[in-house]
Image (tube, rainbow over all chains, first blue to last red; front, side):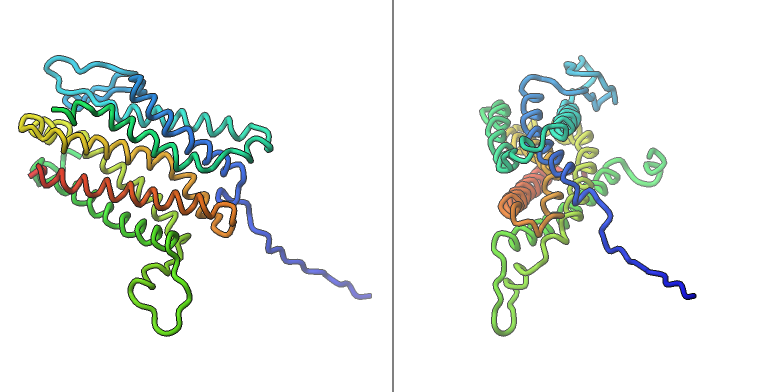
Length: 130
Length: 167
């Protein structure tokens, strides 16, 4: 009596972030939300925190520069707002039905940063007019 | 980090960081320019020996994607660290001497760098799926956009450093 052993080899690739459709939806929604959240955060003064480089102080949310403590920096707070907000939007997009998430217009990813740049440049008007 | 300042001056420390920031930016600029040219003007098969321009356009763009993301983040983090010192040691003296437009462009550069950060995950994903023709157009657009952003940031940073460095 002979026994035959059948050997099988599998060449299927392990799933990765790069091949994950869910990550594609997340990344697309993240990229579309990021410039919108960033510009709103800047214009509406909604940084997650304010950093005072003269004293290394960090305040939650927007805070004015304190007398004799140097300037206040909001850029870090705007970025934190953008990253957290976009992550939430990306996560929500992953929960959308496929027929909707598949139809998110991809051109918004490059168009929106271009559209918000003139707005951000306008917000810097004091630098251009002095 | 304070022990470092026992051996070098404060301005030397920040100058070294700025040089590292610049070197990372140069590598990023090279990678993105290569990739953008290759995706926007791909080289066609030619008879005979390929010249410099053809070879420049012939790189395999997908191989650059992860490196570009890593370099953007590293350059960004180092720049964000230097920005704390810049705000006091560079910007205030430049304000006093009236370099308002230079400072304005630098603030715009910071916005551009932040916006670039926001599109990196999508850029990476579309390059990792480079064989999917559905993403051809968006991959090209994002790569060219990031390259233009990088050139803008690099040139503005360079001009600002000419106006006043840490030394």
